[in-house]
Length: 368
Image 1 (cartoon, rainbow, N blue to C red):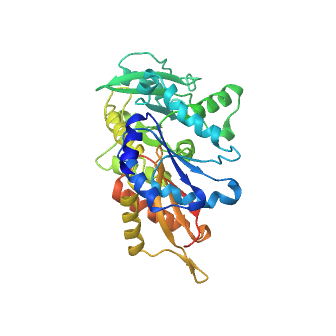
Image 2 (image 1 turned 45 degrees about the vertical axis):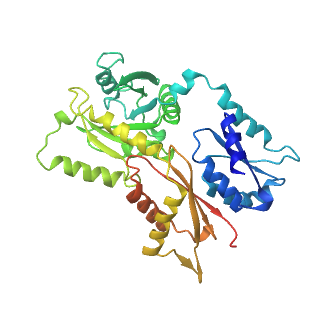
């Protein structure tokens, strides 16, 4: 069997690994998956014989344990799901060299309230006056893409229109700017949230940053105009404390104090961006994840309600940007928010994930 698999792998450009949903996850499936995970080729997992997705959806969950990102339930009998499967497979053949090269490009959206210094930051990063800078709030009306290559790494900075809370948008231009900025956040990897250090943290800053958090982006909080802030040896620590209080919902965010005007600490942003990009794209093997999970449960047992205890069977990573993990449990209702936060903290202790959110998806499966 191994020789046949090896031969098929050698001759292929893309591998479709087909499993039988009605048979469940078998030892043979696990053995083949173990071989395929060592191969440097695209792998698409096809769960066949899912003839009624609504009834069989729960039966497909266990196949995520194999650790593949591209999973497609299909029915070869009634042809459902086959189109999506073929679209995914053919996408690997249609990719052009320049598209593949562009995938290494790190996209960063710069957001914040009007006049926080977003355009000045882009100009400092570029070393030239490419983006119009004005003291009049709201000069930047649209999202502008600017490419920078530094140490052979390509970055695209998206300078967005100044944002305000939705409830305070008073004219069509501000409304247009707001939604254009949302689009910019959607297509970026990392968001730099600009705060005017001379003004201090406002409720609007937390509201604006919430956009990036909700969309699962990497986040850097850049406190700008630090050169004109009256400070002593305790100011930076006090400001950091306030940030952690106001942005308590995103404790993973990186913080840097800069001056876009003078360029002070601006280069630190590249170091932060690179670290976050690595954390956003980190993949952890299923076995290692479950070791951390078992250890976490041994230190703090799962919650229970009315005599029924939550059981977590296993965890597997299914996506990146943000790192996404599926937890297979006996009863979703038993998973308390505080325990999920506890597991998130344990995963961060084990693997880092500085600067990026991580996402958990709960799936129920029958106890065997």
